[in-house]
Image 1 (cartoon, rainbow, N blue to C red):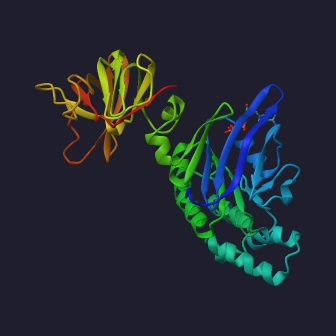
Image 2: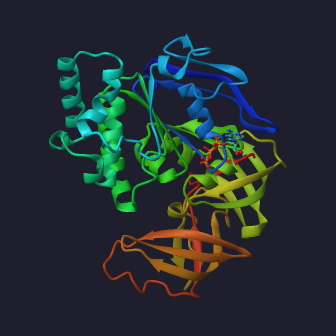
Image 3: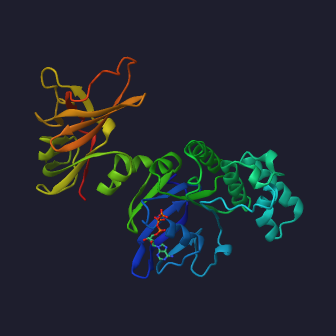
Length: 374
Ligand code: ATP
């Protein structure tokens, strides 16, 4: 994806509403044919950024280029973009086919071409047999697909999607995730989707931008964001994480050591972290990267024989466990903190593997840890 040409350049864009800075000096590049997600908690500025791409809001500072053209002064209807809204706004009195044809009719596209393009768009969203129906004879998911067809039929360079699945129930939302991603692949149009749901962004997007308080926190693939978070906010927002404050006591190109008194251990890494010795850092470990071991006999060996004695291993007590079928989630009390650990249920007889109140060890490999400076 990175070798694709840039389609959208957002250059140091700021937008203020009175005293509120909704978007603060955000710079981003979105590639041609990419499925891009603008992600973040409520109020972080993601919708404002999408609306600036659409031309419904004007940046106070910075500029937006689409396909090399500066969008300053270009009204929404003259931009090579189309928007699909949260509440699939379809005209209730028109048939599905007329809804999809509407924009083409306004643009003066001749009837024969219009009919062919409407048929193609309805086929794409799997509604080929529904053209004569009215929207109230459709399910929520089908209505959302009509809205999608109506936007795609105009062949925009960019499709902007504002929380497109949020009006659907959980099951349908999951099914539509796959459909939407498949449609995007098929048409190759650049999709920019706003969502507050990190699972949705991870499942559908090639790359995401995570925002908080109007600022860009990190931009990357779902893998980048999950495995290599840029800071504590990203580590915490994307997935679950166990995080501890510590002091960086050693930092060499191929090893680093963090003292984490709250967990009663030292955290050893088999790579450097480019920090100053003595500085405060945060070590972040994902629940599936911690191994839970029943504390019955001798202290287990370190997960890596090269690790200094006593590192990457902590004592804890299981305070709660939840069997989820494919895995069990353990909440383990370590010092005053509660850590989360996932254990895959590899055997069918694992249900009584560990009871609440059981003493355990938690162990992790030296490459399981992300060390964060901020
Ligand atoms: P949500 O997920 O809740 O829609 P969001 O991340 O999309 O949130 P925005 O809608 O972009 O956030 O809003 C960012 C900030 O700008 C918020 O503090 C919001 O209250 C403010 N804001 C947005 N639009 C306006 C407006 N038209 N007038 C004044 N303030 C606004």
